[in-house]
Length: 188
Image (cartoon, rainbow, N blue to C red; front, side):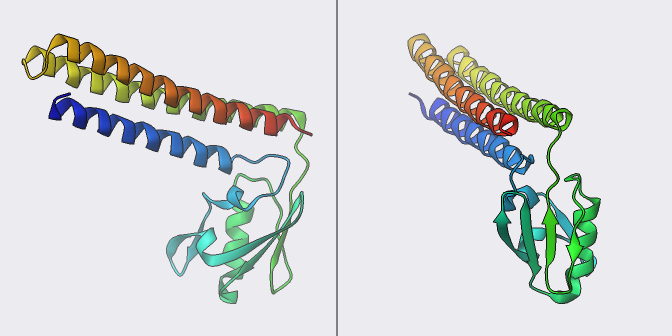
């Protein structure tokens, strides 16, 4: 394999891996019937005028399947954290006792579960499109290398087969993440 096609393949594998990681993070932030600290991973709090990730400002403790206790490290940020939680799309009503914030997750309705499944499928499809775009760009680079005479046609064909296998591996991994998330959302 020539140096340029090898670099293109390594770059494609790296980018596909990142697309898979993004979809995993997105799926973790979609709420299920259970309380989990990763639900708050995308939340930002206005902390002294700067948007700061909630996970940098507080500790989380899951009491039971539907209750989370959030304890800000800086007590002066309590109202800002509470406001960020209330304004989020999680549909929660935080209660503040001056020391910690208690969140009781409401039961998911069937309709809300269906909405979350649609959201998960949409995010999964976006990730697959991203992987396919990476494949297309890499295939164009391989075709250009063959056309320019940098590599032979046999090597180009072999590299394209490797690219297809790599793409299939990542698309299948995205499907597995999506299937797991759907099962989790349907679990009552």
